Every structure is written in C-alpha cells, then in structure tokens.
Amino acid sequence: MLLSKEIIEKQIWEGFLEECGEKTFLSSWNWGEFQKKMGYKIWRLGVYNSEQLIAVALVIKIQAKRGTFIFVPHGPVIKNIGEQFSDVSENSSPMRALLEKLKEIAKQENCGFIRISVIWERREENVKIFKDLGFRNAPIHMHPETTWKLDIKPSEQELLMNMRKTTRYLIRQAEKNQDIEIVQSQDIKDVKKFDELYQATVNRHHFTPFSLEYLKNEFSVFQADNQISIFLGRYKGEIISSAIIIFWQGIGFYHQGASSLKHPKIPVSYLLQWEAIKEAKLRGCRLYNFWGIAPVKMINNQLSIINKNHPWAGLTLFKMGFGGYKKEYVKTQDLVLSPKYWLNYIVEKIRKTKRGL
Image (cartoon, rainbow, N blue to C red; front, side, top):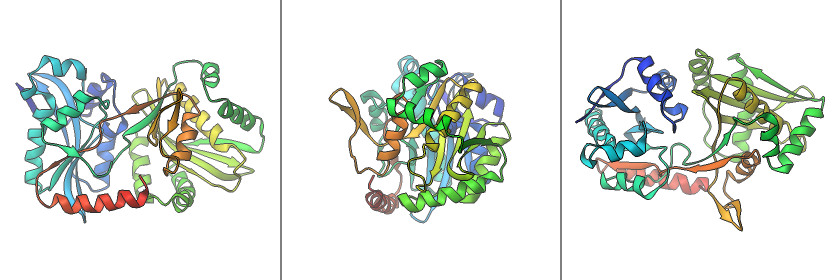
C-alpha cells in the first residue's frame, strides 16, 4: 500500500531527486524555501511504498483574486516512472496516493481546485492517468510545457560544431570583439542591474514581470548553496544583455533573460549564453535547459515554429540555434473541487487570449 506524508529533511528530499532523471529546480528544496520567503504556504510531500520513497511533490497554496488553489510545479517527480506504474496497480499508483493527500490539504485550506504542472512526457498513457483521475486541461500554463534542452557532455568544440552555422559565427565574432565583455556575478546587488534591463524587455514584449523583490529572494535562496549566477553582457561598458542561471543537480537552467535593442547587430546575447553553457560544464552539469519555447513541429524534415506570430517566436529561434532537442510535457492539469473554479477559468482564458499564447 502506498502512503503519502510530509518530508521535513532537506537531505532526504534532495537525495531522492538526485536519483531521478526528469526534474527541474521547481521541485528543489530551495524552490520551496523561496516560496516561503514570498509568503506562500507549502508542503513537501513524499509517496512511500512501505519504507521506500518513490515520489515527491512540492505543493504550494496560491491565493489570488481569481481564486485560491493548490499548485504542484513540475511534479510529482516519480523515480523510474515507467517501472512504478507497471509494478503497482492503478488504484494504488503514486499519483492516486498523492491526490488523496492533495484533496485533504485543499479541503483544509478552502481551495477551489488543484492544479498540477507535470514534467511527464506528452504521451497518451500519461495523459490518460490524469483523465482517469478526473482532471481537465488547465486554461493556461503556469510553467513551460515545451522546453529546449542541450546535452552539454560533449567537448566545447563539439558543441560549437553542432550549433546552427549563424549562431556559431556570431559567438566567434563576439569573442573577437574587444568592446564586448561578459561578467558572471554572485553579488545580490547586481540583481538590480538585471532588473533595469528586464523592465525594458517587459515593456517591449508586454508580459507580466517578476518583481524586484521576487528576483532578489530567488537569488538569495539559491545563492546560499552556490546554485545561481547573474551573467551581465556589456558593449562598450553598457549592459545590453543579462541572464539569471540556476545550477542544480547537474543541470543549468536559463531561467530569466533580458536584453536591449540599442545595439541589435552586436551579438552580446550569443556570447553570454555560450559563457553560461561553459560555466555549467565547469560545474559538472550534463544538461543545459533553455526553459520555455513556442510550440514547434517537423516541417519538411526541419523543426519549425508552428505560429510565427507567437510572442516567444524570436526567443525560440535564438535558443534552438545552440543545438539540442525539444521536450513536450503533459499539459497543465486542473481538478475542479468547487464551482468557484469557473471564475478562475474565465479570467485565465481571457489572459491567454490577450497574451497571444
């Protein structure tokens, strides 16, 4: 019989995740600490098969004007997911055991629905698990459902050769340009420099930004374990590109980026991204996660963006130029617990339309 209970020891939580393949920092212990710092109530749940821990899920209570709900970001993370679902019956699956606990929490916290944003591959059998449990597709995603990843185990030379020809050329041009400088910083004061450029990016692309408080709290929590860096790209002394990179459990994550259009022909962003990839390699990372991209599919034997007008179209082309592969996950899932859910549904549908997503 499977049992779900809270985990209170960081070593147990992080140790389990070390053994899991498909994961992101959104399941990390420090992401939970960051959520607490931002004032959210959290639970760290583990699913046990007898004494063996087989799955974990970070659970966050979200309170918004549109409604209160329970959210599981990029989880649950299940060890050897393919094996687990064949080893145990459907009625006692890790997902079902976890859901019973989530329903308890949702009832105690007066939540209108449960939302789960999994990083399980978008396959029919994975979609069916949620359908059978009564879930429905959410009107909007909370975190990327299609991501771009790069295996960075090969040598730097091999990585360069596997890039798009234009990307490789621009990196080499930037390396030769003495007016370009890429600086890596672990100083929290530089979060403000990132934010100044970030706000300019927000105004250009019209998306909802993270606050300066959010960025500082995120930085300070991951900085405590040396898991985060700010990269600043300067041209003639002026910062025109920046990125916040999280390094966690052998993966580098390009989580936030910002850029200026002041010098559009100066390839600072290309060199900055290459320096971040090289830093990930130095730290022993095997994978670089470029985070979210617009939906893509094979057209004439070439991976292409489905909607050229998608707000992430340009950024997607930039990321794909470094080489790598796409990963599509099951769409964000909602379990309706109360009629109050439908107000949230309508609000989010309108938001999605306005953002052109």
